[in-house]
Image (cartoon, rainbow, N blue to C red; front, side):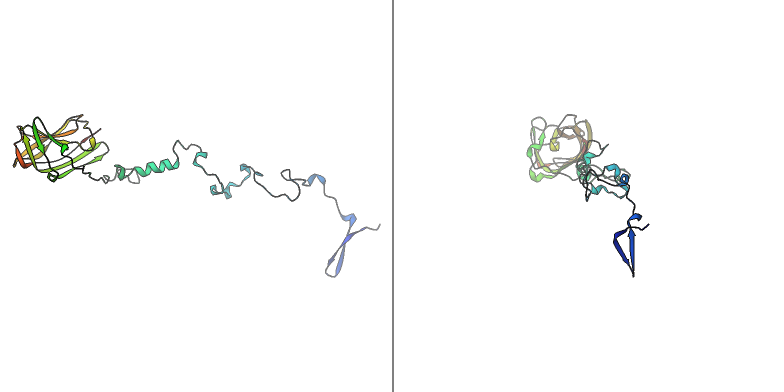
Length: 238
């Protein structure tokens, strides 16, 4: 039997190759691709063709995702990244807290600065009918610093004057409008109208003044620019 020759010829080198129609076999219809993702023709992949489960995570990066919000994660607590960053930044020496080592141990006292209140003669008073005149030039030092709930006060007052009816106590206002929370007492130095004596500082819970008296008792002597008090103390505040 003669074989029918397909109308298509192939020239290979110097030879002409014939393909007979009887040698061709049809493609099974069951293996043919009729559509992709319900689309036919020249199909091109589009968004949402594949699910997350079908993606190779080993070659993917979170940077490939357009939306990378912290709120999309699980087990994140209640604070955002910006809130956490702000909190951490505030917990340093500037906020009155000690620096920490890599192991979260306190390694040093924080750097704290002394504050000098603006001069106010009303910050210096006396008991009874006694008057205590402290001019701006008499205030060599009147400063404070606060570390958590502790206040440190440093005072050095020279050439002050005692008038009125002499009495037992001089008062310095607690700076920054703070209130003393615990009663205590300690020593300081006094020049009582030029005579050096041991002084006593008294703090009373709920009070707003630092009381200075002569340790041995008795009244301050009247003086003009000749009374001085010196001391440094720390105490708990509200």
